[in-house]
Length: 228
Image (tube, rainbow, N blue to C red; front, side, top):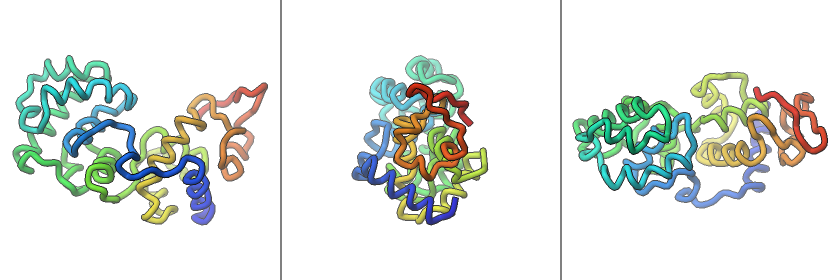
Protein backbone atom coordinates (compact mmCIF):
# COMPACT_ATOMS: atom_id res chain seq x y z
CA UNK A 1 0.00 0.00 0.00
CA UNK A 2 1.26 3.45 -0.90
CA UNK A 3 1.70 6.13 1.75
CA UNK A 4 -1.19 8.22 0.44
CA UNK A 5 -3.64 5.32 0.70
CA UNK A 6 -2.31 4.37 4.14
CA UNK A 7 -2.99 7.92 5.31
CA UNK A 8 -6.50 7.68 3.89
CA UNK A 9 -7.07 4.53 5.97
CA UNK A 10 -5.76 6.36 9.03
CA UNK A 11 -8.14 9.29 8.47
CA UNK A 12 -11.10 6.93 8.04
CA UNK A 13 -10.24 5.07 11.26
CA UNK A 14 -9.85 8.36 13.06
CA UNK A 15 -13.30 9.52 11.96
CA UNK A 16 -14.91 6.13 12.61
CA UNK A 17 -13.51 5.45 16.08
CA UNK A 18 -12.73 8.94 17.26
CA UNK A 19 -9.52 9.90 19.02
CA UNK A 20 -9.73 10.63 22.70
CA UNK A 21 -7.29 12.57 24.85
CA UNK A 22 -3.94 10.75 25.12
CA UNK A 23 -4.61 10.06 28.81
CA UNK A 24 -7.65 7.99 27.80
CA UNK A 25 -6.09 6.29 24.76
CA UNK A 26 -5.05 3.12 26.53
CA UNK A 27 -6.58 -0.17 27.63
CA UNK A 28 -4.70 -0.79 30.89
CA UNK A 29 -5.91 0.95 34.04
CA UNK A 30 -2.68 2.37 35.44
CA UNK A 31 -1.80 5.32 37.68
CA UNK A 32 1.90 5.90 37.08
CA UNK A 33 4.89 4.81 34.92
CA UNK A 34 5.75 1.93 37.27
CA UNK A 35 2.27 0.44 36.96
CA UNK A 36 2.04 0.72 33.18
CA UNK A 37 5.45 -0.89 32.80
CA UNK A 38 4.59 -3.85 35.03
CA UNK A 39 1.10 -4.25 33.58
CA UNK A 40 2.33 -4.18 30.00
CA UNK A 41 4.85 -6.92 30.78
CA UNK A 42 2.01 -8.94 32.33
CA UNK A 43 -0.24 -8.36 29.31
CA UNK A 44 1.81 -10.64 27.05
CA UNK A 45 -0.29 -13.58 25.83
CA UNK A 46 -3.35 -12.49 27.79
CA UNK A 47 -6.05 -9.83 27.75
CA UNK A 48 -5.95 -6.35 29.19
CA UNK A 49 -9.07 -7.22 31.17
CA UNK A 50 -7.22 -10.05 32.91
CA UNK A 51 -4.31 -7.78 33.81
CA UNK A 52 -6.64 -5.05 35.06
CA UNK A 53 -8.30 -7.64 37.30
CA UNK A 54 -5.07 -8.43 39.18
CA UNK A 55 -3.58 -4.94 39.41
CA UNK A 56 -5.31 -3.88 42.64
CA UNK A 57 -4.01 -6.88 44.57
CA UNK A 58 -0.56 -6.60 43.01
CA UNK A 59 -0.01 -2.89 43.58
CA UNK A 60 -1.64 -2.86 47.00
CA UNK A 61 1.05 -5.29 48.12
CA UNK A 62 3.84 -3.92 45.92
CA UNK A 63 3.15 -0.24 45.18
CA UNK A 64 6.62 0.64 43.93
CA UNK A 65 9.86 -0.75 42.57
CA UNK A 66 11.50 -1.00 45.99
CA UNK A 67 8.79 -3.26 47.43
CA UNK A 68 8.49 -5.39 44.28
CA UNK A 69 12.25 -5.87 44.09
CA UNK A 70 12.09 -7.46 47.56
CA UNK A 71 9.03 -9.59 46.79
CA UNK A 72 8.79 -13.32 47.34
CA UNK A 73 8.41 -14.86 43.85
CA UNK A 74 5.81 -17.33 45.08
CA UNK A 75 3.59 -14.55 46.38
CA UNK A 76 3.84 -12.63 43.11
CA UNK A 77 3.09 -15.81 41.16
CA UNK A 78 -0.04 -16.36 43.23
CA UNK A 79 -1.33 -12.86 42.53
CA UNK A 80 -0.66 -12.89 38.77
CA UNK A 81 -1.42 -16.58 38.10
CA UNK A 82 -4.47 -15.80 35.95
CA UNK A 83 -2.34 -13.83 33.46
CA UNK A 84 -0.58 -17.00 32.25
CA UNK A 85 3.15 -17.78 32.12
CA UNK A 86 3.06 -16.47 35.67
CA UNK A 87 6.41 -17.89 36.77
CA UNK A 88 8.32 -16.20 33.94
CA UNK A 89 6.34 -12.99 34.35
CA UNK A 90 6.90 -12.92 38.12
CA UNK A 91 10.61 -13.44 37.62
CA UNK A 92 10.73 -10.66 35.01
CA UNK A 93 8.82 -8.00 36.92
CA UNK A 94 10.82 -8.66 40.11
CA UNK A 95 14.05 -8.40 38.11
CA UNK A 96 12.82 -5.23 36.42
CA UNK A 97 12.02 -3.71 39.80
CA UNK A 98 15.50 -4.55 41.01
CA UNK A 99 17.09 -2.83 38.03
CA UNK A 100 14.88 0.23 38.49
CA UNK A 101 16.09 0.50 42.08
CA UNK A 102 19.77 -0.17 41.39
CA UNK A 103 20.17 1.86 38.20
CA UNK A 104 17.37 4.42 38.09
CA UNK A 105 16.63 5.37 41.68
CA UNK A 106 13.37 3.40 41.58
CA UNK A 107 12.00 5.36 38.63
CA UNK A 108 11.03 4.08 35.18
CA UNK A 109 13.44 5.41 32.55
CA UNK A 110 12.03 7.59 29.80
CA UNK A 111 14.21 6.39 26.94
CA UNK A 112 13.83 3.52 24.48
CA UNK A 113 17.41 2.37 24.98
CA UNK A 114 17.13 2.08 28.76
CA UNK A 115 13.72 0.41 28.66
CA UNK A 116 14.97 -2.22 26.23
CA UNK A 117 17.61 -3.21 28.75
CA UNK A 118 14.91 -4.41 31.16
CA UNK A 119 13.95 -8.13 31.32
CA UNK A 120 10.78 -8.93 29.40
CA UNK A 121 10.69 -5.54 27.67
CA UNK A 122 10.69 -5.33 23.88
CA UNK A 123 9.85 -2.46 21.56
CA UNK A 124 6.11 -2.96 21.97
CA UNK A 125 6.26 -2.58 25.73
CA UNK A 126 8.77 0.27 25.52
CA UNK A 127 6.61 2.17 23.03
CA UNK A 128 3.53 1.78 25.22
CA UNK A 129 5.36 2.97 28.34
CA UNK A 130 6.94 5.94 26.59
CA UNK A 131 3.71 7.03 24.94
CA UNK A 132 1.30 6.57 27.83
CA UNK A 133 3.55 7.36 30.78
CA UNK A 134 5.66 10.15 29.30
CA UNK A 135 3.81 11.24 26.13
CA UNK A 136 6.92 10.40 24.11
CA UNK A 137 6.29 9.03 20.62
CA UNK A 138 9.29 6.97 19.59
CA UNK A 139 7.56 4.40 17.40
CA UNK A 140 4.41 2.30 17.02
CA UNK A 141 3.57 -0.51 19.44
CA UNK A 142 2.79 -3.67 17.45
CA UNK A 143 0.66 -6.22 19.28
CA UNK A 144 -1.43 -9.05 17.84
CA UNK A 145 -4.25 -6.74 16.74
CA UNK A 146 -1.92 -4.24 15.06
CA UNK A 147 -0.10 -7.10 13.35
CA UNK A 148 -3.32 -8.68 12.05
CA UNK A 149 -4.91 -5.43 10.85
CA UNK A 150 -1.67 -4.27 9.21
CA UNK A 151 -1.20 -7.59 7.42
CA UNK A 152 -4.77 -7.81 6.16
CA UNK A 153 -4.81 -4.23 4.96
CA UNK A 154 -1.58 -4.80 3.04
CA UNK A 155 0.49 -2.32 5.02
CA UNK A 156 3.26 -4.87 5.50
CA UNK A 157 4.56 -8.19 4.22
CA UNK A 158 6.54 -8.85 7.39
CA UNK A 159 5.71 -11.18 10.27
CA UNK A 160 8.20 -9.94 12.87
CA UNK A 161 6.62 -7.19 15.04
CA UNK A 162 9.75 -5.01 14.98
CA UNK A 163 9.89 -5.16 11.18
CA UNK A 164 6.17 -4.44 10.96
CA UNK A 165 6.75 -1.38 13.12
CA UNK A 166 9.38 -0.10 10.71
CA UNK A 167 6.99 -0.55 7.75
CA UNK A 168 4.26 1.37 9.58
CA UNK A 169 6.67 4.13 10.59
CA UNK A 170 7.60 4.55 6.93
CA UNK A 171 3.94 4.82 5.88
CA UNK A 172 2.50 7.16 8.51
CA UNK A 173 3.63 10.64 9.59
CA UNK A 174 5.11 10.80 13.08
CA UNK A 175 2.17 12.81 14.40
CA UNK A 176 -0.02 9.75 13.73
CA UNK A 177 2.21 7.13 15.36
CA UNK A 178 0.77 7.57 18.82
CA UNK A 179 -2.76 6.91 17.56
CA UNK A 180 -2.08 3.91 15.29
CA UNK A 181 -1.88 1.37 18.11
CA UNK A 182 -5.13 2.62 19.67
CA UNK A 183 -7.05 2.76 16.37
CA UNK A 184 -5.83 -0.60 15.08
CA UNK A 185 -6.64 -2.31 18.39
CA UNK A 186 -10.12 -0.81 18.33
CA UNK A 187 -10.58 -2.10 14.79
CA UNK A 188 -9.08 -5.50 15.54
CA UNK A 189 -11.34 -6.02 18.52
CA UNK A 190 -14.48 -4.56 17.03
CA UNK A 191 -14.49 -5.63 13.36
CA UNK A 192 -11.29 -7.29 12.13
CA UNK A 193 -11.58 -10.37 14.32
CA UNK A 194 -8.93 -13.08 13.92
CA UNK A 195 -11.44 -15.80 12.97
CA UNK A 196 -14.59 -13.99 11.86
CA UNK A 197 -13.86 -10.50 10.52
CA UNK A 198 -17.03 -8.55 9.77
CA UNK A 199 -15.80 -7.22 6.45
CA UNK A 200 -19.15 -5.88 5.26
CA UNK A 201 -19.17 -3.56 8.29
CA UNK A 202 -15.58 -2.43 7.81
CA UNK A 203 -15.14 1.28 7.02
CA UNK A 204 -11.91 0.60 5.09
CA UNK A 205 -12.88 -2.56 3.18
CA UNK A 206 -12.39 -0.68 -0.09
CA UNK A 207 -8.72 -0.27 0.82
CA UNK A 208 -8.18 -3.73 2.31
CA UNK A 209 -6.09 -6.29 0.43
CA UNK A 210 -7.62 -9.15 2.41
CA UNK A 211 -11.18 -8.17 1.50
CA UNK A 212 -10.47 -7.15 -2.11
CA UNK A 213 -8.61 -10.40 -2.77
CA UNK A 214 -11.78 -12.34 -2.02
CA UNK A 215 -10.43 -14.15 1.03
CA UNK A 216 -13.55 -13.14 2.95
CA UNK A 217 -16.83 -14.79 1.99
CA UNK A 218 -20.09 -13.42 3.33
CA UNK A 219 -22.47 -16.34 3.72
CA UNK A 220 -25.72 -15.52 5.43
CA UNK A 221 -24.07 -12.71 7.34
CA UNK A 222 -21.31 -14.93 8.74
CA UNK A 223 -17.79 -14.64 7.37
CA UNK A 224 -16.10 -17.94 6.62
CA UNK A 225 -12.40 -17.06 6.63
CA UNK A 226 -9.04 -18.34 7.67
CA UNK A 227 -7.08 -15.75 9.61
CA UNK A 228 -3.65 -14.93 8.20
